[in-house]
Image (cartoon, rainbow, N blue to C red):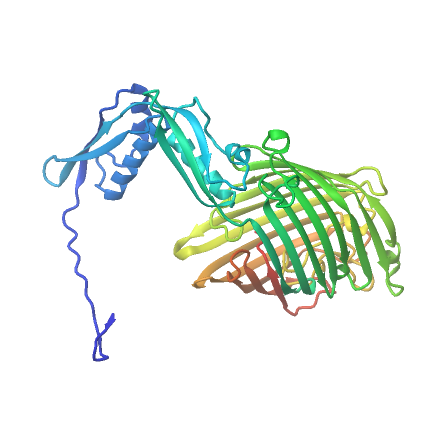
Amino acid sequence: RVRAADGQSVDLVITIDEGTAYRIASVSVEGVKSISLQNDLSPYLKVRTGGDYSGQALKDDIKLIQDQYGAKGYADARVTPKLDPAGPNAVRVSYLVDEGSSYTIGQIHVEGNTKTLDRVIRRELAVAPGQPFDTGAIEASRNRLMNLNYFATVDVMPVDTGSYVNEKDLVITVTEKPTGTINFGAGFSSIDDLVGFVEVSQTNFDITNWPSLTGAGQRFRVGARVGTRRKDFSIALTEPWFMGKRLALTGEFFYRDLLFLSDYYDQTEIGGAVSLRKPLGEFAYGNLEVKPQNIDLSVDNNASEALMAEEGSFTYIPISLDLVHDTRDSVYLPREGHRLSGGVEQGIGGDVDATTFSASASQHFLLPWDTILSVQGKYANVSGADHIFTRQFLGGANTMRGFDYRDVGPKDENGEPLGGDEMWFLSAEYTFPIVPKIRGALFYDMGEVSGGPGTEGGGVNSDFGFGLRLFILGGAPVKLDYGIPIDADQFNDDGGRFNFTIGYQF
């Protein structure tokens, strides 16, 4: 519908003549000199004998053939489609291949990097001198460099060497961009109330390059969060290629004063962490971490005997191993893929020797009209959970949204959560677009925390609700949820809970 000059509306009708639908009489690939390459191509062609003709399928086949040649070093391979009549409403499709020559990679030149060290760029490359001129691996190298987020542009150009007929050099030209950020502001959540924060980060850090401190590809972060119910300070440095291998070494120091955990006690943590993260294929990684810390629990005089018994200062040195397989297409709004994780944590030395086994899984399904169904499950079991900071909890914006933070599970006689030895949790969420950058959500949660010293409450709890996802900050969404309990213990009233957070948990 369009608006006419006189202000009256008129109908605009577009007439489409579909023409005649054609059937594929035969498909052939001509000009292929390598028998193995011919066999590699045939099973994957989208244009098939007996099927309907499709221009998009034809384009996909041309790209497939060129990619197959490119993977074998045929950088100049060209594919021309030929369509011949084959009777009424039928057509013969021929792909005419000009293979060109097979090349190897000569030298690799890097240009434009005034801050970033050459080795930081070269270690991301999926190709090396002397290897076949694999166009797929070259494109993967370009994507890796762009994903570093150090460069505004990355161009990779082949150049004839002039000395060797079947050899091409690669020239990688980058345009660097700022990699340091300063973030500050204030926020609010239903867990820790009002919080002010400041964070300074540099993703292309070099601890040895004074005074610019940039160029080696290290990641540095220092930040503080101060609010009505929490005080946090942390500083961390990551070397993503420890000892020249794809092995990320991270060191961190932290201080946390966690008033939001309870109205009856204050938990303060001071310590550090050292971790090693190793990729295990394209989608998986393992993470080994040791996290020595001192935890101080200060309990109010009007707390229950069970909570009073928790008071004290404890040295806690957990060492953990986690394995993760992650195929999600996005961290903030996954439409497809899954995330699987499993881990074990053991207290060594110090005052705490608890052992925790945990596992979680999430799966995302893209449905019609850009709607998304996400399901997830979690399980954890702790042995030797003699201290409240080693136990399991449920409830709040990131788990069971119809209940207050950590309010699902065993409690003392005052209704204060004490946590449990075992936890399981299931959730399903359906989101749908409303307007650009705003999605609606419907959800259902259920779970249970059992064991531990609590004598009241517990059992299976569940809730349902609705919410909004606001993608207005350029990254993690603002989540607004209203959860309504279905099954609850005597301490969890039937009223709904409003949750406000920034971030995505599925």
